[in-house]
Image 1 (cartoon, rainbow, N blue to C red):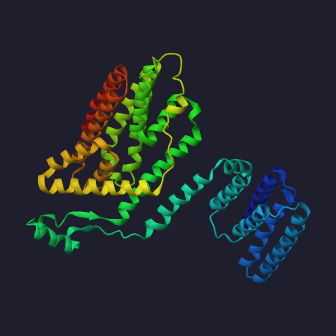
Image 2: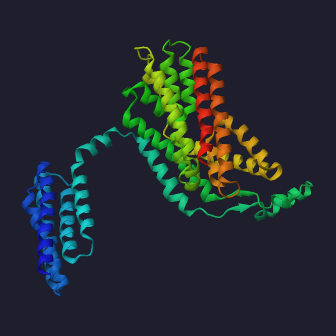
Image 3: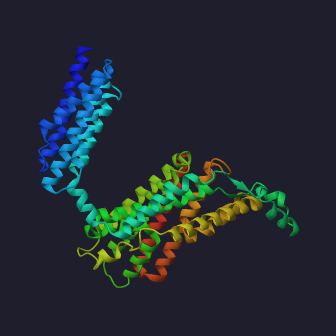
Length: 438
């Protein structure tokens, strides 16, 4: 018992000294430094030991005296420095609580040490946080707040019930009046409000992540990097932008490599789409995704290696797609698109079986694969098998990549289109190797 007391007292002293060292080294105008914080940590530990030993009045007296002295200290220091901030005072209170936690043993030792480290890190970030706040615009703050409302306010309160056609008698009766066998569609899933909204949150979250990547790395860090970030935002738009540039820019290999990189970013994005919805299918589709990423990386490296020495002009403007972080209206439109794709593919599955499902998904892939991929992730392992979902995904992805090649043919130069088309065919061919791991 005695050794435990000594250990806690010494640790309270050291942790308090570490926090005080940060405050003192930061050049804070108050006289609170290593000595003060060490004694505060020690005081909290000793007071809590008395409390555990059955002397609560001693603990109450020590805590009361601490609060009074801290209040007096804050009043005099704030008047002297004309600084009404109380970061140091909060750090003092936390140091006292760290000492108290050590004395009572209410928290594991590793947790207490971790909390102390976090406090020191937060205190040391003052200069960086001020620069970050200065760099954030009002529109960015509003976007972050909007995302927080979508994810933390609306999502938890939506119903997590899946509604089928049988739950809507009026629609069922209307189908019967039109001489349509409604019983065939009784099991047709119409909507799950919470799941649908979660997908909206997921997509806007990916847009937000893409924007953060762009802000973190910047468009001037290199043509390849800016193209990759632009592909994370929209691979189709970035590819079209690079195709248009190929008409006037002679550095075709660099443009093709950048276009492949933009599509490579969309393959990484698929991890974020599938993982939260169906981690079991993610394991099944993982070999295919890795093969696509590996082949795309090799192709991009090849074209960048044999590019001309000069960079494409104005690459910092065309490599990455400029767009707002996100807005509610496009998010709702995407949710509606997902709902429509899900209904059409499910109806095709009921009426025409798996063949109809695949045909419907392939046609929809000309507009993009995100909605189809989400639908497959929801259905895989349930309405369709993992193998069938993987087969559909490979076909849908192939059609989408070929559609991008068609867009390049319509908007870009012929050499660019040929090189990009061959690259996409190689990636498509490689994706079929994923079946070897099923």
